[in-house]
Length: 237
Image (cartoon, rainbow, N blue to C red; front, side):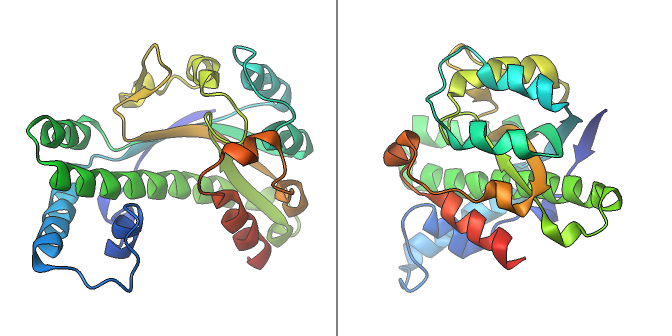
């Protein structure tokens, strides 16, 4: 079943510290008035321009196996390849903030408003991640009646371009999910339009399947190692 989900703007507004952290500015830094004003303007524009929506589709494990193979460019071994066989349920998903906010970011950069563009870009990235989190939590909630003890179950999302899943995997993902229904298209480079969009698969099953050592070949090339935080958060739930 495919479901289109309209996401409330107030549910994805990032905190200011998230926006700053996306630019490498930690919460202990005292902002100059000029930077604070740019941040305030970015948050205002985020609220007025973002048009969040999502799409999600249940997919059998054997169908995802074909999607994951994609164009045959995945690294091996990979975390995703090791995690999904242990899943009970899987769902493809995509989330977008719409064209208007991406157009505004592009306009800022084209007109040399680099500080303003970077701030809004950071806010939009955080907001898109929040949208993906909403779909993940929603999917996990929908599965609650399928388990005797949902507390032992973990649902985490994985996206092409990360964890060894080559970005070209977007092609087969799009063919199955059809995120064009919410206005997302795929470039020849496998990047999405609007740019502030997130896609991937939500893998649900025993929490243990999501616990892995970050010693895969792809881990050496990963800049943020955010999987460690996600795995720890899952343990603590």
